[in-house]
Amino acid sequence: MHDDTAKRAVSVRIRGQEFRIRSDADEASLQRVARYLDETMTRVEERTGTVDSLGVAMLTALNLAREVVDLRDGFEDGGDPERLRQLIELAESALAGSAAPS
Image 1 (cartoon, one colour):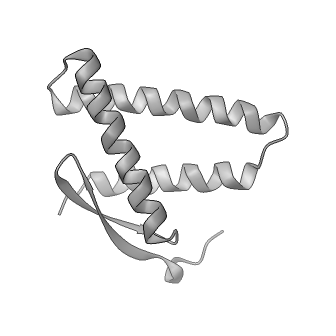
Image 2: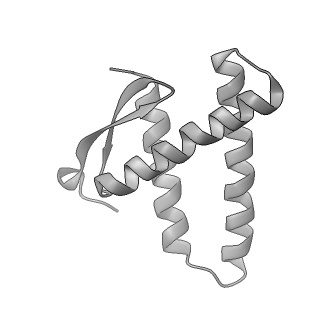
């Protein structure tokens, strides 16, 4: 369990919108994750021709969920479960932050 007092708000930009994410992860890591999400959303939009923001977000979520499941399956075969937990917490933090853009 993490100490909430160690968490700080970090601003990231996704699809031209700024989001503040509370996390104990370092800012560079959060920026890298936001960049990856933004790039993935752009690829999904280009591949599918979907322009609806919610549609792009849902298709991107499905793609990223597939990656997480693949990673989880790999971790179950001897990988680092702590790293997976950190990735899941980071994703949950980003999702909670996306509900209230600033």
